Every structure is written in C-alpha cells, then in structure tokens.
Length: 516
Image 1 (cartoon, rainbow, N blue to C red):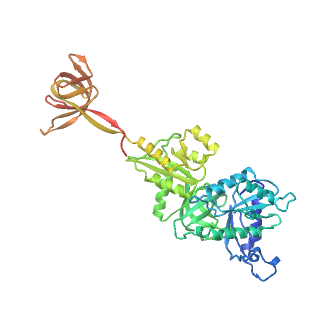
Image 2 (tube, rainbow, N blue to C red):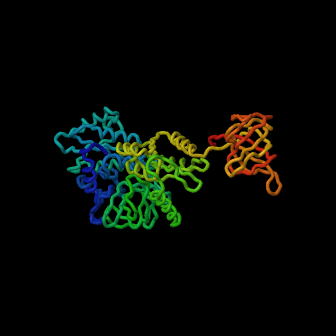
Image 3 (cartoon, rainbow, N blue to C red):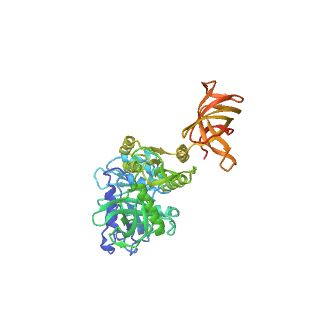
C-alpha cells in the first residue's frame, strides 16, 4: 500500500522476478490481481556471504514458505476484502519513496492499516535515487507516532530499491519473521465452511466471465455449484497464476474461476451450494428475483409472494464477520407475515451497480460501516431508492423491524356499543334495508357495524350477516347517535335479509398496530 508513484508495483515486480523458480511452469506468471512467490531456502548455506541470501546470513533459514501478494490498485479492493474484522491480507507493506515525503495517500493507507489492526512493514523505496533520505522518512513517521525500530520504536523499516533489487531479500525476510510472530492467527480449516472473495473480474471473449478469487477458509473444487454475489454457475475449470489448470483452490491461493453466468463485482462473496437440488432452487429464486416481472422502478415497497410480504434488501459491510452477523440477524427478524429477503450481499462500499439492482428489484440498500460513492449517492437520490448507512447493528435492525411492522395489516378490534331490536321492516332491497327499531342496550352511532342475529332457514338462532349503519333518524330528523330506551329509524347498507324481531348487535371497529 502507499501513495501513487512511490513504487508499489515496482516492488511487487522486483519480488516476483527475484523469487521465481525457473523450473516451475517456465517461470512465467499471469497478471490475475494476485500471485504467489515461494521463498527459497539457500541450497548451500556454507558458501560465502555474497552467495547466500539474507535468510541464512541472519540465521533465519526459510523453509520454502509461500507468500501471496495481492496486486490491486488503490485501497478500494483492499478494503473490500476485509475478513472477520481484519483483512484477507495478513500483513501490509507500506511503501514510501525515499526521495519524497509522506503523502495524503500514505496517510490514508496508514489509517486503513491501523483501523484493521494489521501488522505492517514500511518499505522505504527508491534508495538508489540521488535525493534518497531514509532518515527524513523515519523522522516523518515518528512525527505521526510511528517510531522506527532503530529509533527505539516498534515500526519495522526496510530500505529497498525496486530498480536494483537491493533490500528485497531483507523485506521478504521481515515479512516471514512477522508471519512467524502472527502464526497463531494464520490457521485455516480446509474442511470448514467456504469463505472467499472476488478480488478481480473481467469478461474473456473466448471463455466468458472470469473472476480471481482468494479463499480465507475451506476449499473450492472443479464442478462445485457456486453463487457469487448476484451471479452463479458450475465451476467448469480453475487456473492458477501460471495459467495452468488445477482441480481445487485452497486458502490464500489466488486463482481464476470459470463458469459463472455474469461478471461478479470486486468484493462479492463466494458461496458453495452442496447439493444440485438446493442449487437449482436457489438459482430459480435468484432468476425470479432479479429477472422477474411486476416490480415497479424506484421507491421501496414489499414484494408479495402469496400471503407473505418480503422486504428486499441489498446489504454491504466492511468485513465478512460483520456481513454475516448483519445477514443472520436480518434473517432472524420475525414479524407475522412479513419477512426479509437478502437479494445481494457483499463487502465494500455501495456502488451504482447496487443502486441499479435496487431499482430493478425494489430493494432497500443498506451499508454497514461502509460508504457510498458520489455517483451511487446521486443516482439513488434521483431514482428515489432508499439507502441507509449504519455503524451500529442494533440501529440497523431496529429500523428494518420498524419498517416491517409498518407493512403489517392493522389489527381490527371490536368495541361493543349496544343492541337494537327490530320492530318493523319498511323497505328491503339488494343494496339496503330501512327499518324501525328500539335501542335496548348501550348506545348506537352512525357508521357503526351491525351484526344481525336471527333465525336461519333451519330455525336455529345465529348470525345472519353484517351491515353498516348509514343513516339514523329520530322524529324524522337525522342524528348521529341514539341511547338505550329510544326508538329510531335505521338505514343499513348491504344485502342481508333482516326480519322483525331480529337483534342487531352494534359495534365499532378499532384499528390497532399489530404487535410483533
């Protein structure tokens, strides 16, 4: 990591070229966004110093450990690959040019490193240049509370020259030593759940969508059914950094995968679906969601599936651990016949691609500890897409729960008002009934509901139907209410056969927010 033009790519090239083993696949690596180097153990440690690498000279004989370098521009992909509160990277190398000073992008890199709690090494590059001044760089570092080791601090600084390759072995040795100190944190479970992320993707004219992935846990094998972001496919074949076909990918092994239907985004998560039946079901659901009809553009409204209402959500988070926690909690929200449906999840900032998907699927865009780029923000505002960013998970869940509650049909409660005995039927049609009656209990009100009790066709007393009071009169004057003991004329709407001596049970309907 580091400021532009300070030599990040040059150092990577110098490392790659200096550590390539000629016998391995012709010694040619493909640019796939990440690559591995094998740290070579000196074959003859008894030789003179000039013939032996720094690993042997410093009594640190390296045993062919493999290091994966992630070669991505800027910080965006790096921040998109954060895993379990840290990063898919285990160690950061901060590159600062010896003939320059600490620059804004350097400071941004330092903030990212400190936020992630990553162990790091400072590579002071371009020491071959006339204006190189390592002491000046160390002084700059000390002024921002990064005190170099040789100044009594803890920050490892390694002077290097990507051009002459001076110090490259020292840099690699420091990476190895730091990895040794952090080894307890570098354990993975090959048989565990797959955790992987896309670090680069593109469309190849001959083979279709291609994605470079790195796994953090588990294994990925040829033939696996995979879902990556909003796309999917059966893993047709896998290529390593040399362009050679391989059968499986292990953690920290960068590889290209082929067989996806569409190009995934950087930061999309890789998921393996264990059975063909489950895979077909998930694909069917994805197709109906992403390419189904009947969804209007813009706004946010629930998708209907029978009697269930779904709140479609697209969520991005800063780290895989955070993302999993958010998704699990969202799926765990219960609210009668309203459920959440996560249409897409991924790592990194919200983008215009997410906004376009939200438009198509009427989804709520949610970001947890991430940002939204300016273009995506403007587009969301223009399309009236709901987009919310959160730093506290309880607030996120609270807002989603409240929105789910707002979609519930209100609970209708009955409040009994009174009773009317039917004394006479004046007129009865298919649309209304006009009758005379006496209020025997309570009080009746205009607009209230009347439940009609009377004899049915079998002679049994029961509910014949319901109607609504649309007009009340006493002494030929319209009134809004009548109390017990008074006689009145009533007009009721609806087609219910009412007869003399029927009893009208009068009640009002009260709408209440449904409790979850």
